[in-house]
Image 1 (cartoon, each protein chain N blue to C red):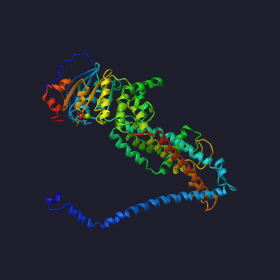
Image 2: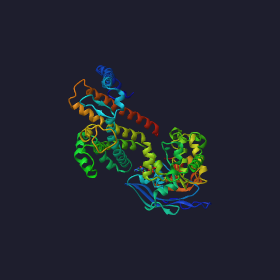
Image 3: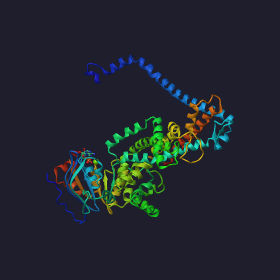
Image 4: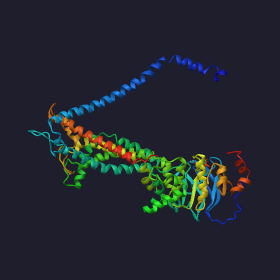
Length: 314
Length: 264
Ligand SMILES: Nc1ncnc2c1ncn2[C@@H]1O[C@H](COP(=O)(O)OP(=O)(O)O)[C@@H](O)[C@H]1O
Ligand SMILES: [Mg+2]
């Protein structure tokens, strides 16, 4: 026993402390309930949102045929007579912007990640990583005006047919916006690849570049794919940049030089306008929102599939 | 402290693969290798023994310049490999490592299939022909005494193998580019006794075709498998001689103390 020589007995002290513990015991017992409550609250909120979305979407489809919605290539909700609700123009608007953003962001983001994780010194990395995270926090309205007042005029110097509002400029700027996210998350995935693997490859006579491309990148692929999907989901859901610089002309096709409208920009247009409660236009934003939701859901499922399929376990 | 390395009665007239002359190495201020002089023969197993922290890993990593990965390392002196000083800046490190393979303390296969692990080296060196690659895989896995255990699951992930199998796979990966020298840094310290025995037998066989330099913490292992042994202590080579001499009649008191287990 430790207590024999000391002036106090540790076991006795513990006994005494235990007596004052009734308050603690109550807290110990309450904590699981409090945690459960908050968990249930957040799940219920989400369910509530999804339920509203589904409910209002059903109401919309009682007014407009589902077939028209997914096949019609015209979106004229504000028509004097009866509106036409074909989602394809809005979808093609979103896809054009998103594709341009991906073309910009994936190569630059991945190249930065490889640089930071494999080539940069510890010091450089410590400086650049926080900058990337700050860039990811800039309000998107700022990017919107950057697209409209800076990028569009420059692009118009090179492409004279480019309209003031177009898909190209917001697409590029969304690409710039999501690049730091891809870079930062992919860098995390690549840095967590154990050094022993790099050493194994170097010891076989690989160059640094071969190690990055053939060992580190494949080993980190699951994290990299998730980062790209997350970034694409953000691009699809991005609202302010396209609302400011993309225009409000729903057009079907792949032209990136003229004015477009994306799903999100349409929702903004209606919510900030004066479409009365209960009108078809009012319900249409839920149907568009639902479509958006389905797109992001599909993206996430795809991501899970890809990262499972190509995962390299270690 | 005169090192006893001048006269090794050596009946064979094998050529040197490595000649180390006056090698010194510093980690920043820490003088980790002091005036190392060692000549290593081809087609022999050379063991490096000594207590923890005496510089065994540092020395073996200098032989393929993996030591360069650690920032702040400085060297002086010369290591000539087949007649050329590898510490010379103009020596391309990728060329050196294509000739000098390495097996690490902890098995470090790539998170790829067994097949892809073996063909990684040949592929980065430009061999693409599927038929040749298939042959390399079979030959290397047989060479590493693991072919029978894995031949039916070449496309499965290497991380599904046991530790001992992973280490033999790493040896196969190394054999796949047919190196001249194989460096091994305590290759069995993470393995169970049976796997250890398998790797030891393997080393015996491999010396027919390769020169092997093996760091080991385990003196019985050095005695069992090596032709020559170098005893390191505090960054110096205390004694370098035929293994049976070192273990029967060591010339230096410190060597004797170490091998009789009085320290370390
Ligand atoms: N990365 C490193 N940075 C600084 N000092 C190191 C590093 N690695 C090893 N050392 C030092 O070099 C000496 C030799 O280490 P090492 O070669 O690993 O010994 P061994 O393999 O014989 O146990 C030790 O004093 C150790 O502290
Ligand atoms: Mg060591």
